[in-house]
Length: 110
Length: 118
Image (cartoon, rainbow over all chains, first blue to last red; front, top):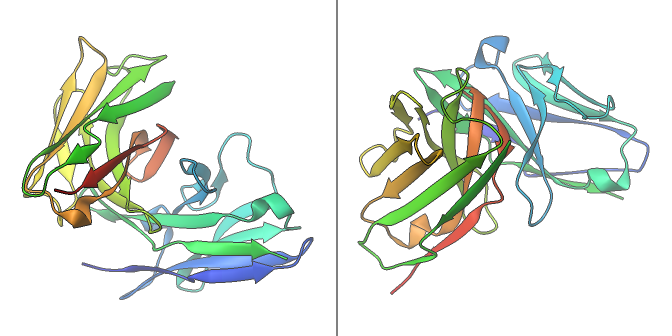
């Protein structure tokens, strides 16, 4: 099965910009994979940030944005805040009703 | 809309895990949504298990397909998961969620921890 890849960890300074990516072990991510991004803080269920590549979920600040960059999906956080320190997961629709999560990125804000 | 997962918190190896997700705030039969199960081993990432439509149509992860069964009980507005022949690798927090698209899960239930141990 194709593996969905994410950076295991990333750090950003408060107020800085960071781009997390979501790729494939084989091939390129396109909008047809409908990349979706979730944020998860310890002890909590994930919450949707971005769906269908670049649509922000209700209530999500506009400092979060989604896109395709090169051959990967990307989640960009502009003006990072302390409470953005979380785990971030992308999930791709592989077709034929098959869904695969990436391994997640642990984002540190310091 | 709220979802609440519950079920067996401790399961012996080789036995069957059973969970139920109660849906409140909307009918499980409304819309074109499906209802999904996702799990997360302690300290690890998320894994999609499968989803079921209110019609009973099901789709499962290829890696779990041989051991997974899901069902819907419209009268109780809930859906269920069974996972057979469990091992320690099935120890995880199990989340239920509404699937608005195949990979857009919202909202999620709070999750329930299932430990596989003798």
